[in-house]
Image 1: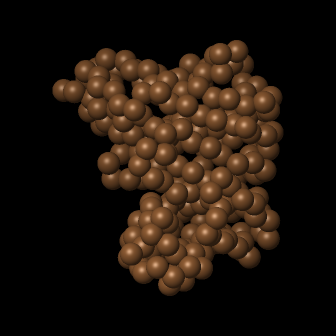
Image 2: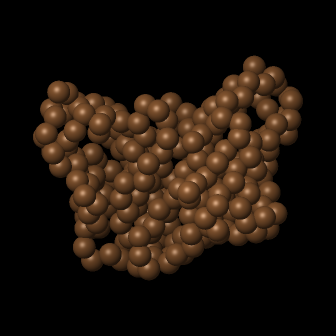
Length: 117
Length: 117
C-alpha cells in the first residue's frame, strides 16, 4: 500500500538559511508522482513543486527544489534562502499510476516550518 | 480567473441533518477530489472523480456521498452528519495528464470548515 512519511512535525530555521523538509514514500507501482504543498496560517493549499517517477532531473521551481532519490524512496523539499513568508505547514503527497485521472492521492502528516528573523 | 470554489466556507450543523458542500471549477478539469484535513493527520482523500459519472472511493469514504453529473461540479453530501465528521474539507481539481507529459498539480478550493454538534 502507498504511504507517505514526514518525520519532522516542526522545524525552526533562521531567515536566509536553506532548509530541507524530509519526505519518504512507499509504493510498489513504478509509475507515480510526488508533490509538495504549502499551507499558510490562512488555510489555503498552495502547490509548490512536482516530481514524476520517470523524470530524469530533480524538479526546481524558483527557490524550491526537490531532492529526489528514487532508490531511497525519498523526495525532500529544499527551500533556499528562506524568508519569513515561508513560515507555514508543508505537505508531501503522492499519487500512483501512470495517468493522473485514475488514482488516489495520499498526503503526509505535514511539517510546520517556522522562520526566525 | 481559474479557480475552484466551495460553498459554504463555514458551516455549523447538528447530528443527522443532511448537508451538501458544493464544489465548482472553471478550468474544464477532468479530475476532481474531496479531502478532509484533521490535526496531525494531514489531508485524507474522501472520494475522487476521473470524469463525469465516474467516481471512486478514497481512503475515508464512510459517511460521505458524491456525484459528478457535470464536469465542473462535484458536490460532497453528508446524509447523516456525525461529530466525527467535524473537519476542514477541501475540494481540488486537476487536468488529466500522463506521467512524463509535463508538470502536474492540483488546484485547491479555499476549504470548508464544518462543525457537527
